[in-house]
Image (cartoon, one colour):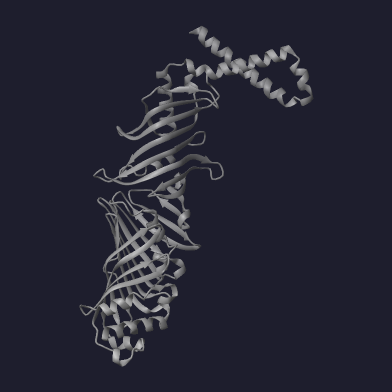
Length: 496
């Protein structure tokens, strides 16, 4: 043992001497002297000897026992990242391009349960102190093709990793997934991790997480900085496809957490206050630019998982919700709501409709359940003339375009004012109470088609034949003359 220690001690001394000589003399070399150096056999032999020694130094870890290496790396990973790894396969050593160990089929264990299965782990160690296992220093770890199992109890797993010291070691996760399950172990969603990186930000002097992900086929990036002294997390979420950015400050001190988020959507700023614990997530949304005339509030329950969102507005622009480039329309196109595990309700009340003063008291009722999206029982009033109610509705995507199909029941409260508004000839003015019709609307083309009109319970073929010549598109729905002629032609067919 004494001879072995003496050998290791001598190798260390030689290594230090070579490093010192290299640092002193390499900068003095000139290109013109290379020919002289190349012709000097002593220098060539010295260079070869140094190279052989350096390669030998890099190969030292190959002589260590597998159990000793596994135990040392396992303890180092637990100390640096507070992650308990289990290596099911042999740890293989390689010094190119820099010293590292690799292993397949590894696990991360937490509370005696497997929280992650890792296809491959790569552990990079520092060039210093390769002579003894005791002095191994991990400076980077890469997990590839890992599957993480998360639920409500360990949902903060990735954020808790930030509590460790990344000053001299980074942690990366690539091409992986995490599965979030409910209490019945059903998968609520799968988040694909393309590239996740934990590191120490020298400018912020804080631990930082940056991750590129995909959920429900929707790509997004997330940056998180841990202000551990204040018990706060700063995060920035980017959804480029929707032109949405969310900057958030999250207070995680205590059981009940709270936060404040600024939303930037198409250069418009909104504000969200929220609170959460292990059972629910509640929030209030407030559009600052609209001078407090638009407010959302909602709640997400985790046991069981369902959500309800409500909104009130003095005036609302429907294109913000279902316009061609609106966020809800973009999310529908991605298929984000197709999961059968989603139970989502959205209700909005507005006194007025922007750019259409004839409509008032808009009451939107929508729900997403088992992959179906409908707005049944949505109501809107045409001033004091009629109440329009939607039934049997379905919003769907076909060939990349967004459509709404459904039926509508129109209860006419003042037929005289309707005839007056459309300047209907007196011989066409017949008493009408209820109109039922079917319709199909394309959000992308802003086109509306109406079919199967039934007036006061009676279907008239002549009226429906007239509908074949009617096709609302773009501004035609706002054109009073076009509407007047269309309505009067239908009334003519109905009376005749």
